[in-house]
Image (cartoon, rainbow, N blue to C red; front, side):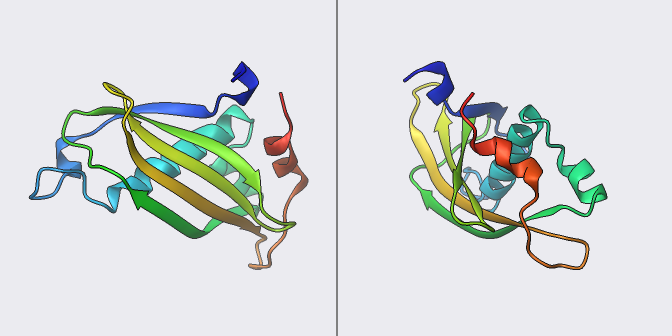
Length: 136
């Protein structure tokens, strides 16, 4: 795999308050991890989520499929990878995986489907999204 084929990754660490009574990360918290990584990925492509919203370009999650493979625990360091995929003219997807860093174990395999809506709530895909799919 060449550097251009390497997915974007963000490193994070589990915080105690993200865990439930079983001592594992609560399943809903993974959505936060995935969203944070997508936003960081966009920033590396000069797309700031807040600035897009100010321009009435609202990227919205319309579907998220998560396969839970194993559980993270307090203090675990992990990476979240992001790989964009074109789905259709109005939809883009993000293949995302969470790996525990110490042993590279796959914890989460997810696919998020996103679209963009304008200030009136009508779907459209702005030109600024196109660079997400260009090979660097």
